[in-house]
Length: 527
Picture (cartoon, rainbow, N blue to C red):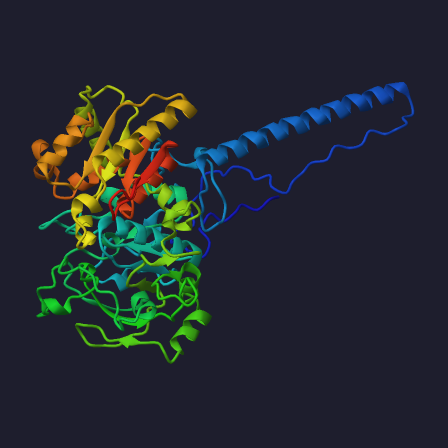
């Protein structure tokens, strides 16, 4: 009798062994059935005839199996590479859709995050973590898209290290949200239940682990990538300040550096200097160098180095070694597998195995569809036609032009129009698709520039006129624009913008679309 496979993700324990996993597609790799050779001489014509019949039946059976294998492979290829701690791919048939009925408590899936905490959110994170499991977290860097990329890197590092990711909320960066914005949880933006199913791994948020507004300030030892990979001699500071109510402590604002969004007093230890590119001053390190720190031998070796720096915590002024149960890093943006900024490459593991599976929260996506229908003058029940999207980043990029005038540094709308036409031509010639509609998103504030957009016949969402911020909050103009960017069959972005980079990858992976990036920095850069 074949033993039933333990459904628990590799390296993790659950508090309930009643969890079951949906049936996986069979894997036939390495199994090649061989038909028996028909005997050359048989005792009688009757036996010979029976043998031939059996032989033909056997060949028919093998053909049936081969057909099933082919269908299974095609289905699996259509879904794309999905990775889990078990190292097995899954097909779309094994992913629970939003329309499927909820499982009862006796059938909780092993990536149900509630299985990996002692209770609901508690005042101190330490009392909520299960001693038999290991976790991993990090903090934010700069800008919402960069934070999304860093969190995807974090999830991937957790997967290869058999640790459960704990995601902090996104801070309201000035470049995307403006002043006065509030923190927004990961699950409010992205479809976490779907991501857990796709990756078949539990993913937590800090709101699940520790109570928002908790008066408890936890002490925690973390690794600093920035201190180990740069000559700054300091860990990366960020803007997660006073998100929780820490009023019972008389703490000055300058002391509230990292992660006080979750009420934590952090002591940092620098990672070993392990550049992704040999003899380079670039701050990127590798996933595998970081993963080695999360196992006893690599941790011990790193802590024994004479170059290792230790930074006391800003509130209690205590020095702690990196926590073994909850591994944490100051910044996960500058991490790669092969080269710096490899999100630009098709092979990027953080994209292929994590970020491409991070789809929008269904409520947010439905809201974005509503805005698209309004822009196109459609009724709420009308299907949305194919369209091309643009992201033209100008506001803060103009500041990078230095003494070069903006009109010579930043590309004109004509450069974007040329790229739009390239996509139209390619869709028409190669795919026999005619696409006329275009939606443009941009941070440009000049009314004259937007008049040029209207002259091109392109559509755009007027968030101020539609009262997006007053209805939904400061995050939503940027969020709706990002969702709309991902909905196109074609996309034209601005080179060196991570928002354009990620939007292009979504259009290509999710929609089978085409993308272009417009270069800038000098006159005629995109010619």
